[in-house]
Image (cartoon, rainbow, N blue to C red; front, side, top):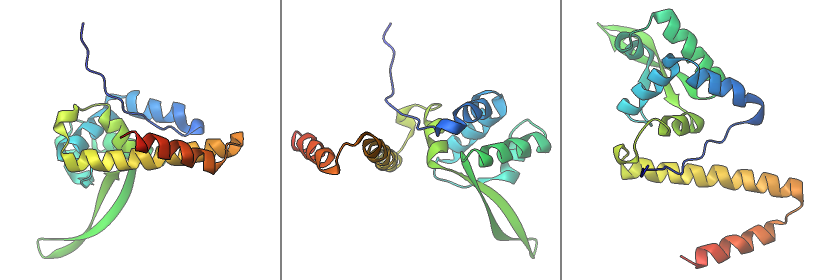
Amino acid sequence: MSERLYPYVVFLPKDRKRRVLEAVFGSEVPVEILRFAIRKGIFEKIYQKELISTLNYSNKTIIDHLKALTGLKIVDEHIEKSESSGRVVWVKYYTLTDLGRWFALLLIEEESLSDEEKGEIIRNAFRSYTRWVIELSQKLGVGREELSRIFDEEVGRL
């Protein structure tokens, strides 16, 4: 059986790994929230009001899961002013964090992403991975010069 594999890496903070996985995959609600974000575009605003009117869950259920996802740094919470019927109101919306986008990537096919979105993901992945390698190399006593030499060698092969 030929199965298509995607080389996406999810960087999970060690102390939050279990809680993050339970929050995202332990219930269908967080998964539906991520799927909604995918349909909107993984860099777009996710309005709380739209989630409540679109998903078949109670307001309380959606809000509770949004709070959990915010606490786990999968989404960031924002508020903006909006005018409705001549009145100024505050509207709550969410955006996927880098970690949230990684989880969203587990749910979608690569073909559904624009080249711009793929490029942004590659840049974020490279930056995150580089930070992780630098941090680990410092703990293990591997010098930056050696990492830089290896990087230059690999880039030279392109």
